[in-house]
Image 1: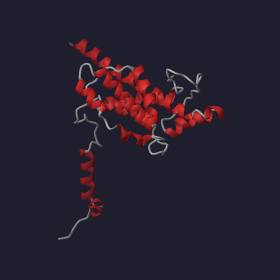
Image 2: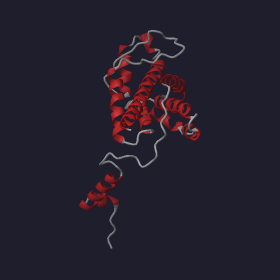
Image 3: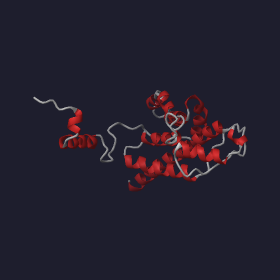
Image 4: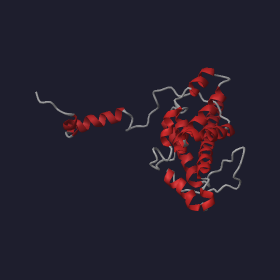
Length: 223
């Protein structure tokens, strides 16, 4: 009996058909609801999100600070009504998200703060179409807004330079700021990244809060 290798199979019509079925099964062909349970939503304090993102940035970079700060703010919000949900949120393996510093492994690709925002949406939204809708709004904010908007409680750098990037990669967003900065301002590039990450996540929290507020209003109207 002739043994068919994986390479042989993929080189045949059978292999292509089978591979196509696998892709479909994995969800590449259609946008469907997740099979995993999403987290119970609770409106988050956007000011607390900004503060916690800013404070957690240094330990692991943009995605780490973005996701950890937002999740900890969520845990605070939900704790009074669902202590178990808060415990689960706080037990997230945040260390894994250090991978995005410098545009994922310093590849200068998708901004880790933007990725963190979209990941945060996905924790609460069953319908992937809703995730994509909020991702589009967050992306528009990131591309078209003069950033960073966030100002920490202790502002040691007032009148901080803000720049419109017209892109969503680390290369584009950070590069646009560096291009506009003076030599003296460039010394604050690390502070720029912290404020940028907090800015993106404050917007993400605002979008998520608004989504669920609109959903609740429609449910009340239709009741």
